[in-house]
Image (cartoon, rainbow, N blue to C red; front, top):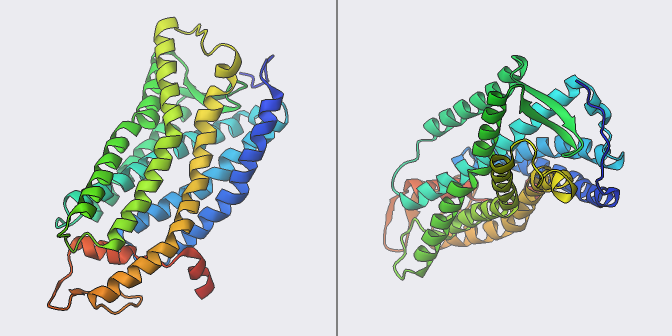
Length: 353
């Protein structure tokens, strides 16, 4: 099978306009995520902290893997370049699929875990089972992307339409299977994540409007939750075009079969997947550390103020009791999670080191 570039009618000017965006994501998102990863690696291993660290690590890995080949492809008139080598094309294709699926999964776990903590503040989260489930899911996705490719059921090839290597089934049943898996793991998760985000926002708003607030609804917890909500909203905003594109593509394929006139020429052929797929991933990966950087200073101020009001000593160690003027009581699971989540900011962590 050849990976040579066929005759095309895409728009070179549009390709050149996309190059600066990918370059900005590369030179801003990569150091930003490395900074976030270094910061989170020094924090207590709370579930949210671990998920943020894994997200930062995956984003730092995904940005160069996606941006560098795409920049060279767009600059060179969508010639395959190193994608013309089948091994390189397969490796980059497997990595891209794996990154896309796992990034959605980590965001979903982060959103669901925070929603669970808000709905059941006194119920202890079983972090061990969560980590086991995450390990099982990542293992299954890795095996799916590698075993079927090695067995020859799925193959990767460069297409000028997407501008990168994409997988497909070697037979019609395997092609249908691959399409269903891609849509299920990449497009469908936006629905449960949206529901989780709505529940979280509603719970925060209801908690803030009550006159008699629970101690578990601390400023630290609310601000930590707001950061997770912002992460989720960024994902939803930039993933919605991909979801709609998948829906339109599935409808067109069911209606027209392989001869799909909607995705056959023009913008939909050359830019629908490039814009809603690869570009959206690197934009999300770039914005995530910027959200963290913008909110860590507020975390520090609110956290110190909250601890002082409760009569607890502000230091690097979590408070073991929640102290108020009239009484002291044991710390709840939700408050312990909040105390571990207290942030000082990645820049201050670098200054201390």
